Image (cartoon, rainbow, N blue to C red; front, side, top):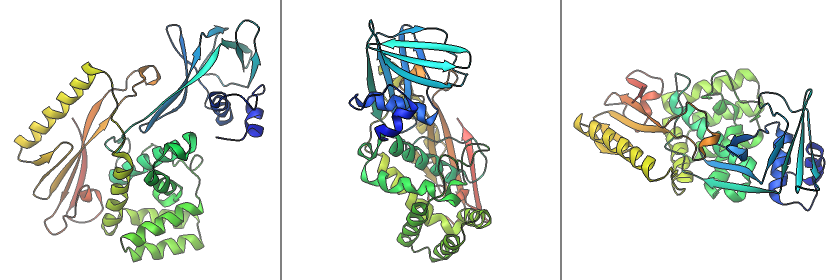
Length: 346
């Protein structure tokens, strides 16, 4: 949480002794990410919504005066005390002025398991892109919610997103995320530590070169080397850390009916793969030198804050290696003769 002296500039009218929810509201204006969602007579303000955490603010007894346009930029915002309602949030949008009156502000937050969620929007090196998204998700959780909402492994691994050669394998089309996650020394430090853990001396030499000259050319070089099959042990070590960070959180709970439908989909896919000769259980299966890892896309529990067309779905990460090159889950996605990886929509 940022300091009061910084946040009051983003939201004039904020008082130092106000509850945490008001500081969170001010942060949204500071980040330029404020929005209001309405469902019937309820108003919800998303704070951070991602695979790992859903956190939003609700306004008690809210009344909106004026027409709020979510697609328009908010030029300025201020908080006032009202005579009839407890607080007034005044928003200026170009020629439009909106006031949201409310009695109080409440925080709703929940953390979830995320290591079985995958988004595959860019083709190639999907195994790294998946990890970049997961680590970025952890870093956002750490940044917005604070380290008290993260376990020890999350606090450690989130720094990896600041290692630019790793971050270059972004799963988001056309977005290297350098503005949101700028290169930092801590990113280099953690990648060195990870390489030492798996005795990857070749990549350690490359990191030393990058540390001495962190230019874009060197960054791209190190990023390309991550795609080499020599990095399989490093990748799998990082992946295991992400699984460790995530596994003790609960799954999303959509209610009995939807939970049962998801359970049925998982069971049906498991039966289909077993009938095709694979061994294992959901979500990891194998047959000879082929492994299948089922990844899911899961909508938010708070449905009002989700995109209208975003639904639960399953995707298969199918990794094939020749007998001599087989070295674990997703190893087929790395570059090299005898390695093949592909994503299949279920």
